[in-house]
Structures are given as structure tokens and as C-alpha cells.
Amino acid sequence: MKAFVVLVLSVLVLPLWAQESVPDTLYLPVTDTLAFTVEEDTVEVMPVFPTDIEFIPGDDTPELLSDRLACIQQQIPLTYNITVHGFIDYFTVRNRDYTRAMQRKKDLYFPLFERYLAKYNLPDELKYLSIIESGLNPRAISRARAVGLWQFMSGTGRYFDLQTDWYIDDRMDPEKSTEAACRYLSQLYTIFGNWELALAAYNSGPGTVRKAVRRSGYKKSFWEVYPHLPRETRAYVPQFIAIIYAMNYTEQHNLVETAREKLPPYDTISVNHHLHLGTLAKLTNTCLEDLQKLNPSIRHNIIPGNGKTYAVKIPVFAKEKLDSNRVAILDSAMRVGKKESAVMMYASTPTHGVPTVYTVTSGDVLGGIALRFKVSINDLKEWNNLRSNTIYAGQKLNVYAPAQRTVQAKIAEPVLLPPDTKTYIVQPGDTLWDISRKVPGLTVEKIKSLNNLKSNSLQPGQKLIVG
Image (cartoon, rainbow, N blue to C red; front, side, top):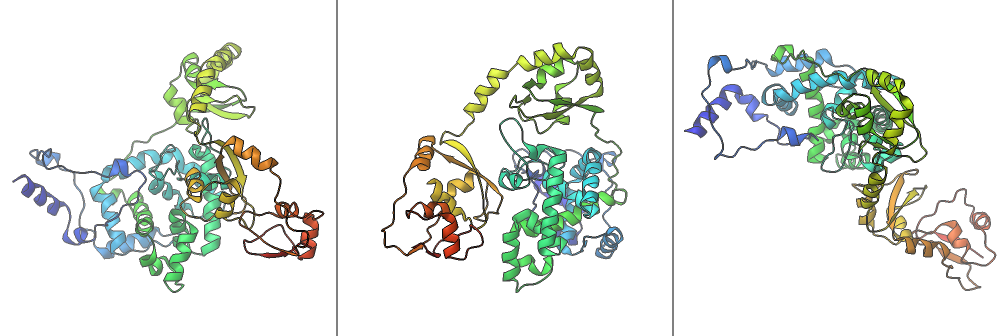
């Protein structure tokens, strides 16, 4: 009888065409809060009285939704189809609370997004992308270890100057990550010349989208390439379109939310020494949670004393309290937790070695870098959260090689080639300097001159004249 009642209610809420268009995949990094399971043993059907029923408009025809999307379309196409319809239904009927929550939070970050999108001459509607990426949560972490409002993997984050260590994660910094996202989106649009494909590439990487384009016979639009994209990416763009619709037509769906979350008015102080936020909060009569909201990139409530200068936001009233007794308050905040944080940081360092940061140069391949450091490709991908073997010139990679092995590699003598050697086949990981050391009297400049090389880039298998 319980199952029958639930079924009847669902049919009353969802018209038949909406039930048929329910998407089979929802890509939302906040799925931990969106997804739900129902166990039959625990379901209790409570009596429903007319006063408890929220009015949910359900007479939206395909023609009406298509017309509404056309009315709010700006630079990015807002295509209507059955897939988009299913996600509109999700945000306006099945998960109305999520849409209301985004309305409450949007004023926290939308002004920031709008400022940077204007700075980079990007479509204003891209501000809604962070809702799909992170649910407007600067500390969101996905199962794939993507982080922040814009869900950067560590490797991509470093490529766009977002640094991460035990103390600070720039991917959680709203301002830095937003500028990085604008730079990345600009690059992707330059590559594809199409905003829908650029958004797909933001989700799954430009290499994945290029492959899908090739498999489609070099089609030009997202919907033509759609069948060849990963399942998650096929859902990504329709969700983006649907959340733009839901956020712009709240009144038509009885979803108006007047409450707004706000950050406290704040000022900024520059800190170049160890600082314990908990102590600072206590001595300035403020709430630690407010400091955390204002400074989401500070991971463990501690600013490191590493010689760098950090900008720390504090509530205005706390800044006034700090200014009244600055020396004593900062002295106390500088002393607390210094040794404990150092112990915790070192305890979190991977046990498999000492980290070395390697900057990718033109011509590098992941296999060559792995061979050079005597590690596996899988290790490199795991340490740097890489989803594929694709790397970019200028990208910084963490390499964890045992310290002793690293030192030995630096001082090891090269294996000399026979004196009559005239040519050399480039091996994975070779550099011009490595090759020059193998032949007495050979220099990098001489190798480049003998082979008419205009750069230091080498490819495994390349034949070089060395004598």
C-alpha cells in the first residue's frame, strides 16, 4: 500500500512527458547533497493535508520552455530539447531546495564573477557555471579531487598559477580561482570557437572533446558531437542551460527566495609570519567561522611563516579591535600552534619520497619524465591528479622520488659512447645536455649546429649527428 501511495504522488507531480525526459545522469560535484536513496524499510508515508502541499506549476509545454530560453539567451546558445527539459524539471520540480539554496548564495560570488568575466570579455552567463561545478562552495572537493568554486584539479590549477600546499590552497580562493577559470575558459573558446564545446572541454578536457569531434566526422556543434562524448560531459551542458533557466524563471515556478547569504563587512591585513586564526578570532572577539568564510583558501586555520606575504580578510569590527592592541594580539597569534602545525605538515608529506617540482618543457612526454625520474607513469598521474597522459609546456608536476636516488642521479657519470660514434638515437627522457656529456668535446651548441636545431626540443627516436 505504501509503494502504491508513493507512485500515485509521483504521477500527480510529474506529467508523463516529464517522466519520460528524466535524465539518466546528473553531473554535479555536490551530488553528495543532491543524490538520495530510498530504502523501503525506512519510508514512512505521512498524511498529506492541503495546507502542506506546495504549489508547483506543471503546465509548462515544450513550446513555452523553448520560448523562455530564447528570451534570456545572450552569447551562449540556450538550446531546448528533451534532455534539457529533463534537467529543467530536475531544478524546478524534483530538487527545488537546491535551486532556492543557489538563490540564497549567489550574491556571495556573482558580483566577483561578473567583474572578472567583464575583465576578460567573456559572456556574463558563465557565472552560472560555478553552480554546476561546486554549488557555489569555495571548499567543495569532488571525488576526483577537483577543488573550489571552479573545480580545478591540482595540475591544471598549477598551470594557471594556483599553488597548493598543506597551509594554503589557491583553488579555494574565490578571487584567484575565478581569474584562473576566466583564463582557462578563454583558452578553450580560442581552441574550439564554440561556447558549448568549450564548456564540454572545461568538464572533460580539450583532448577528450577533440577526440569526440574527430569521431563525429569533424562536426561543428555540441549536439552533433554529443553521442561521442563521455556520459558525464553529455549531461554537463544541458545542466548548465537548465540552471540558467531555473535561476531566471523562479517566479514562474514558485521558487522565489528573498533571503540572501552575505559575508560580514571586512578589511584586509598583510601577514608575513606565522598566524593562528583561532587565536586571532578569540582575541578580537570575532567568530572563527567568519574568518574561515572570508578566507576559504586557508586550509588549517594557520598562515605559514615561510617568508611570503598573505592577505588575510577580517571583519571590520575585528580589525578595529586588532588596531587597538595590535602588538600584543599578533604576538599571541604568532606563538600558538607553530610547532604543532609543523608536525602535522611533515606527517602529511607522502612517505614515498621528497617532492620535486618539474616544469614541463616543449617536447616533453609523460613517459619521458617518468623515465628521467625513475618512476612510473601511473605514479606521476596520481601525484598530479592527471586524468590522461596529456601535459602542457610550462605545467608544473610534483615528482616524489627518494632523496638518495635523486642525489645519485645528479652526480652519476654518463655512459660514454665509443669514440667512432657519428650518430645517436634519442631515448625517452634525453636532453641535449645529457647527450653532450656522452661524447667528449661535444657541447649543446655543437649538437644544435650539426643538426640545424632551432630549439632544445627532442623527440624519442630522433637521429642526431654527434661526430
